[in-house]
Amino acid sequence: MTDSRIYEDLKQDHEKHRKMFDRIAQTQGDSEERRTGFEELRKELQAHAAAEEESLYATMLGDPDLRDEARHSVAEHKEIDDQLGELLDTDMSSSGWLTRFKELRHRYFHHIDEEEEEMFPAADEGLSKKTEEKLADKFEERKPRELEMAANEDPGDERE
Image 1 (cartoon, rainbow, N blue to C red):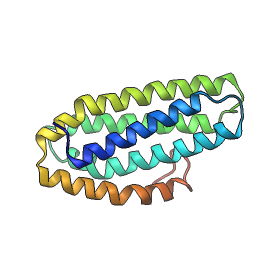
Image 2: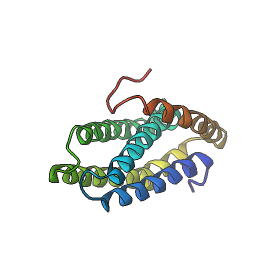
Image 3: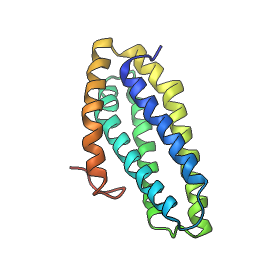
């Protein structure tokens, strides 16, 4: 169940993101560690979301049985992107930053738990192994390019 490479790639990213969130949560004030950690997380989340949308979600949107779940997840990506933008605009030394960061963390963890527990199994059931392999190839090709783009794009910037 959901052991195809595409789901494993996405789950590996999710685990990396969990660790990044945990490290940032341990930081204090407007420190170099917080600034660097958050910038790395921001780029990683933007790249992951874009590559996931262009591979798995694009295919799911084309399948009437999977469309609603994909739409829901795309909407959640937009909410998370908006929250990243709010954090960029907030002074990292303020209590408001940490409060917003914790809200983002909660929202993102809910999102990836939902993907792993509900969406990936549904997609695995509905998609062929051949399609899943193509999606993994596309995700693996797209993610590094999206990371490069994220370095120059703030959350909410229009994608090319």
